[in-house]
Length: 543
Image (cartoon, rainbow, N blue to C red; front, side, top):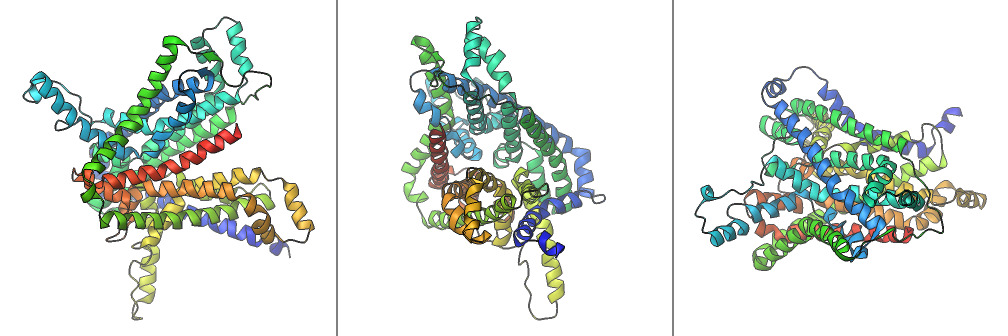
């Protein structure tokens, strides 16, 4: 009787989901702790330090540059009034829709020796060759830092702006009364009060930077992410790839630890009524136009220019790019993204509902176990997923040997591996969205439903789900868009002769033919704009 009470169906499902989605990470850690690997020893003695150093410099560079871009933007749009402020408030989020590898491809085409910028300069100044002038090389580590920071700064911008608006304006007004200038108030009041939010955002940016594969691979910058990819495809050593992934896990652990610590130290001050809630500083004259110019410069470089170039390519190469391949790959991308988003929504709904109906000290563990995959970069996740699936395939083939049925790579060589990896990777996004929606539903509604004779399942389907429609849709959209953009896991796990739009763009760019995949790249960007519209709309309604 005691066992029956302690193992309710909701509890069983939640723990099965949590354990199932955390199995790849467990296998990865186990494989990384195995004995010596010749390939890993060779890499350790030759190039692994260079990979590690490049990874550290890349993360540090992106974090610093993102802070230089996002902190002024967040302060301007939260506290100041200047021309175009209402448009910039949401438009500065647009670069989030651009995958870093697409913006890197576009700017490489634009700024290379054979690109229009250098051709124009040679024509204007009569330069004959590369020895006649100096021009920076984008395909370097600093170039990768700039490209990645341009698409990741919105994370810090959004979080910092929200943190500023949750602070009491009276604190800043008090600093004004004490004679502080806006700059002094920014450094001595706003920044210290937002320290926790800033650290959390920078930890998120550092994890996303480490997960980037396509940009650094295209720029020939060797990082730990590219090392995992090259080790697996070049040496076919799963153990060596797992060991390199283990090093990356240490970096991720530090980032997650900083994020957790920042949440504990984060202080939120409730805004007071009766205070001007639209702006604190009126930027007029040249100050207002300087603020406008800074916002427009960042927005142009990070979004308008790359999208404009893609539109130009699509216009001039429409007949070549608008072909059957595009429709086929777009359909395949939409299908797999739809499957993953539906699965992620359902499993997160079950786990979060279990947390709600059976609160306790251990109730949150299944959700935390299931969310561990979000911290894994795509290449690491692909290795982590292959380990258990390959083992199951091997055991299954051994078991069926001689029976006349040869399943082959039933799990690791089919779409199952991709879908499973995507669910592991993006479950945390759906969990967060569903959990925040559940919090808004009063527990009294549950009690009213139960008192009317409804069971737990009926309460979930007939009472909660209609109230959760918006949260579920948001969760599904966010997962859907991330699946559309995912590249490294797709490159390693896609079945033979199966392509997504992301891999399609990557292959054309690798052949220096971005023009022929311009419509595919634009489609990925346009689909990415949908969740931004929802996020902006939700923030406006919340305000």
